Amino acid sequence: MLFVAIALALVLVFVARYWLLAQVVKVIYLVTALAFGARKRRIDVMDGQTWHYLEAGSHEKPVLLLLHGFGVDKFVWLPYIKAMKEDYHIIAPDLPGFGDAYSQRVPVDYSVYGQVEALQKFVEHLDISSFHLAGNSMGGLISAMFCIACQNRVRTLVLMNAAGIASSRKSDLDVMFEKGELVLLPRTIEELDRLFAMIAVKPVRLPWIFKKHLLHEVASRYSILKKAFNEVMMFRINSPINEQLSKITIPTLVVWGRLDRILDVSAAETAARLLPDSQLKILDKAGHAPMVEAVAETADCHKTFIEQHF
Image 1 (cartoon, one colour):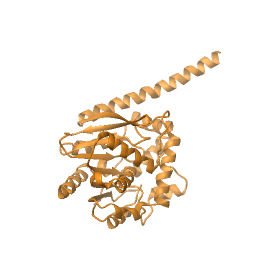
Image 2 (cartoon, helix red, strand yellow):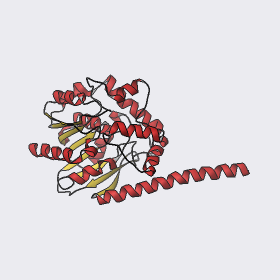
Image 3 (cartoon, rainbow, N blue to C red):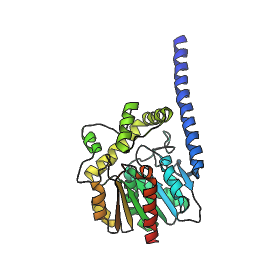
Image 4 (tube, rainbow, N blue to C red):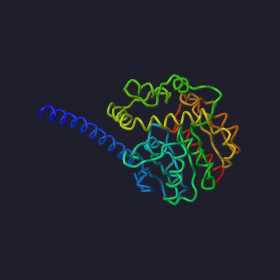
């Protein structure tokens, strides 16, 4: 009995430590969001599924919907929200399986098509008749697939280093994936630092508490993330969206960091060539996340692009 009591106590201490860590990080994120002019919202959509999102800007402004990439959540958009909030009513949700949009109790389809279907219901529940759409990485893939399915709702599309597009050159991520390395699912601080080095050109300096939180989040939902990661990668290998891009007839801006090691910049050139109404912007000093690495430059070209069409 003593052994059982000690073991239970250790488990409780372990759980409490990570629970407290998660609460501290969430408070920091929320305070930062408020400082950047964003408010956290939630809405029940279907079958017990709840969507969590950030909202900023005036309801009188055009709606701008922002979709994050794999392994991050809505808070990755905070610098971009700050740059865009004066001109747009911004909505930045957690995609199913990421951030607050994860539950072991509610069955969710985390596939690309499942994400698109869930996004359709989210937009319908918010009663948004038309909006501007932008997505980074996996969020870019989902944005493109959404436009193919529901193009009449979207006024302009911005693809930032979008996944799902077959490129003429392999990226570092492609080479690692072929070797069986799941670099986007880090297990240790060292693996996390290696991932940061691949994503951004400049070193990503996060406090220890954030790194531990990120690793715990990956570990707690590893099976779901692994399945989603493999699906996104195999989607591009087996059924890239290249041939479907011609179906997207709305004005589309393709933004890409030239130094992206996750998705090679040659994919941007391919996408711009296949899209019927597109512009291409290559950022020479950015990597995989231009909305974070080159906030002002990305926001300026985004605003200019929308102004050219509306």
